[in-house]
Image (cartoon, rainbow, N blue to C red; front, side):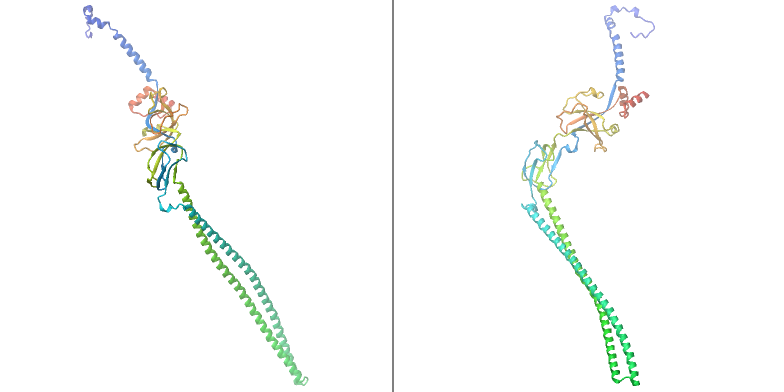
Length: 450
């Protein structure tokens, strides 16, 4: 009954006459249901204060932590023809093992004695350089000898010039003495002439004195002539000295010119030697490219170039290799809005494809089948689809990752953030707010302030 009226008729109804009314009034649901709802409300209220771990979900795949340990492609350095395969797909190879042999297809490398012939050319050019070097040494010796000869000739010419100067001085004294003798003889001749006129001297004595005077004049002229000859010898000695210098300098200049020409030819020969040595080294290195070897231990995964006799070009792909014992990592992709919340060293829980797991999003420690990791690197640029790549390495403090993981396998990851009450997480989800960027202590203070 609804009991809408203040006048109740309950006393006037005989319940025992109506069996349906008796059945309804006899049920206990009207007493149990309020209790159940009350208990559920209490449990739900308590549940709202249970800690919840905020996280960022992202998908990705397994990769190698080091770039050198990731799958790589082997290329042909030179063009050639495939002669022989030494491996098959799936084979394990060690570093340095031969994978394929190729042969030349360029005519300039067909000569089977190419290295020997080029080596002979190098030796011949080196001998030519040595010959030029010996010639330069010989020319230097010639220049040295000419300088020594010049030194001796100059000393000889200087001595001769000095003698000429002394001869000039001697002849000059003789000339001065002859002039004095002439003057004396002239005066004596005058006195004899006076005495002859006075009758004191005979004609014979006068003529003898006159003859003596003539001899004195002749001696003066001879002395003067000797003086002029001596002075001319001085000039000749100076000219000869300069001539010796000039002739010797011209000879030295000629030898130096020949020396410079020889050195120029030596440099050209040396350049040719270096070019030939470069060719020889290139030929030797090129022959090493006839065998493509494994750069590190790994497994042959796929052959791009196949068959015997197939032609390949330089930089063509030959075969791909997967390095063994590569340290694994997980690359996951997150939305740009979550990037400010991620930092290196943050903990991550990972679920690998093909590995059974029971995951509780808010309670990662209670999940089963997930493995721990830490953020190793964060890309500073977005991928073409707008997401950012995060590289996660294994957490050494947790359980080791499954040894059967293969590079390229899928992985779902959760980057763990702050611990907050469930009511706060629900409130954040309803309002579309991002996870907290603060530490746990700051989160709790923030929650209290709200």
